[in-house]
Amino acid sequence: MNLYKKIRSLYIKHFYSLEKQARISGVKIGKNNQILGAFWSSEPYLIEIGNDCQITAGVKFFTHGGAKVARKIDPTFDCFGKVKIGNNVYIGTNSLIMPGVTVGNNVLIAAGSVVTHSVPDNVVIGGNPAHIICSFEDYYEKIRSGKQEKPFHEIILQIGDRDTMGAETEEGRLAAKILDEYMQDFQRRNPTLRVF
Image (cartoon, rainbow, N blue to C red; front, side):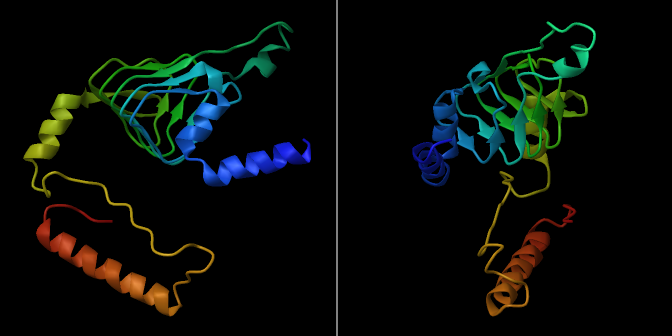
């Protein structure tokens, strides 16, 4: 790789949003998506993401796999498949989306899922291999009618960074104090939720 390409690659990595990086690599992406991290495979042009999706950290999309082993039997063998994600889809942390999978609209994919088959609209899936857990409507009603705060929101909080923020620094002790106070207040307001 020449110097220009290296500099351009570093510039894109550090100054472009993950969504823009995906578009540049060839992924087809709709509007109003939140991408917190993803691996787009070596054929990103085979991946399509709809509108209003959230792709969390550690998610990986695969568009091929296993062909090298099969080539011992048939040297011409290859295995590719498009991946299509519908609209209003949440893909949980560290989920794997395998080749040839189509995910419908209004789908929640639980963290750590391995999605090996296509998924219909309006469902919650999870597991390895992923399977339907319940309808999206049932999931929403269970959360809505539960005893936790309404609506329940996932909170991601980062104070400082891993290189300059140690647990034994003054800032680290302050961060621990703030988080401890928050968790005590959260547990007081949500006595039926188990916080781990």
